[in-house]
Image 1 (cartoon, rainbow, N blue to C red):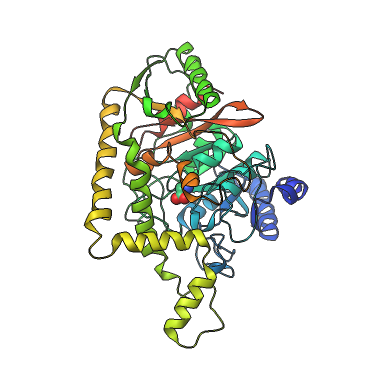
Image 2: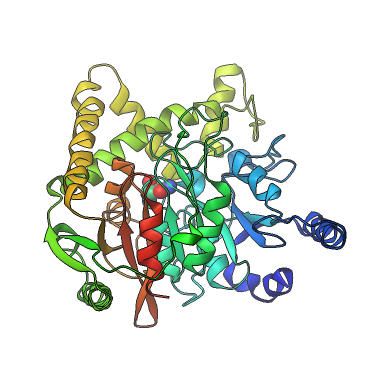
Length: 446
Ligand code: GLN
């Protein structure tokens, strides 16, 4: 069924970089046999799932949408992919993204342009644009994305689907090609909150292969969907409804808050005073980490290697200048500069200090409130090509999602209305490791 739908719409949406039809069909057959002979079935039995192309899959091309990895076939599965298999899910293919997850529109893919299924002249968001578009177009009911500064929540908002960035440490990053290791998290993108809870259940938990994965019990997320939010205390940061946020988006969020009030919750305005520094802090830290992480793509170990090198140094240089796209190069230069001797204290170290202040803002609010609510993005999806010439306006898209990554807390985006035929996302942010409360609130809308 999934493949039927994929063959119908993929020409327009272009969400997939690689399809794995043969193996998926073999797996489905295997599951049919299991159905006849066994009694225990995985939580995602027979469910088709698409995987973002920066999550490694054994024997299945994994490119990070970069020319530098155009021919890379990993020799192992990421922990999340392994867990999907144990849960009897069926991987159908790999999803398009911004190159190395750097971007907010999937226009930085080295290979193809993914379109927003709600309006094919608009971007699907990014960097997990392929994941969100595939779910929105009905190609797959489940997808995995990754979120470093908003890359799950922002495309989920633009495509009218449900996307969760788990608490940092909740989900193993083993086998996720690193962008900014202190911020990256893998998370679920689905049509419903319930499906989202099932998928998180499967991929969560301690992994000895990832030293940053946390040894914190994984609760039963699905049983948290009680529909009961009486007495819930909601904080609404004034920075999240102020300048830069479009009036229609503001109205959609205020309407959602009314609905929650009707269900017995209360809300108050609060402040996250350091949010205004989040964007600058993020782009310094994320680029610094990226410049170190991307050093491994040197033409020796994997992927692309130039044909025109005169010697070893020249080979590194040519390979990287031919293999990486412009945005990736911009980040590597920015990060290398920020980390260089003489500038480290002024930029990188300072950004780390501001990060701590941002984290404390969240801790202060969570002393008194259960969740924080605001929009996911300042506006709905924009037109293809509209922001490609100006990196700063592109970066500004993430202004409401980035603080959450810096603080390490979990956040979800769920649909909360339509403006001119385009979905608006509501962001619900929770305490560390309290995805259950986020799901309970999100589910109250379903
Ligand atoms: N858009 C942000 C960036 O370009 C976030 C990316 C992400 O979360 N992977 O860095």
